[in-house]
Amino acid sequence: MIKMIVKAIVFSGALLIGGCDRNYDGEAADLPDSQIVPQLLDSEEAVIETEWESFKREAELQIDANQAKLRELRNTASDKYTEHIAALEEKNEILRRELREYTYDDEARWITFRDGFSKSMGELGQEVDGVYTVNTVHRN
Image 1 (cartoon, one colour):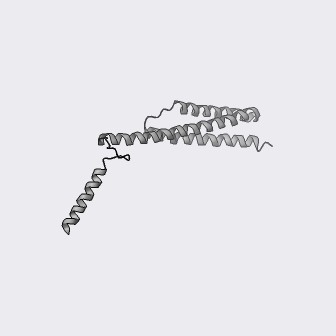
Image 2 (cartoon, helix red, strand yellow):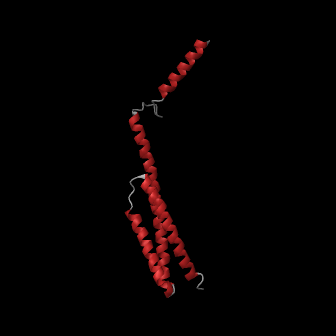
Image 3 (tube, rainbow, N blue to C red):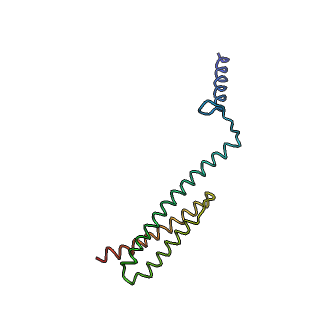
């Protein structure tokens, strides 16, 4: 009885191990272990690059929205806000330039850039919205 159980375990193990070198199509997987890790890293890099592209598109939209509000303010705000609006326009252009000039090269640098840029973008957005509200809502 024990011999039968041992044979069953050995046979099952052989089936499992034999199936591990096959891909989903039933074809033999010819990748050595040294190529599996780089493929996983490449797929992780692709995900991060996709995240970067999405982040870039969203940031560009926010920069454009800030620019549109600032352009409207430049034409309608009272004179006491002229210098402040010009400073906000400059900050907006600096963010646009930083976004355009950034090139992805590794995850750590990307995370640092993303967090710093998001913080700057959020602060600028709040300033623009504040001046916009004061000059459009409270003016009426």
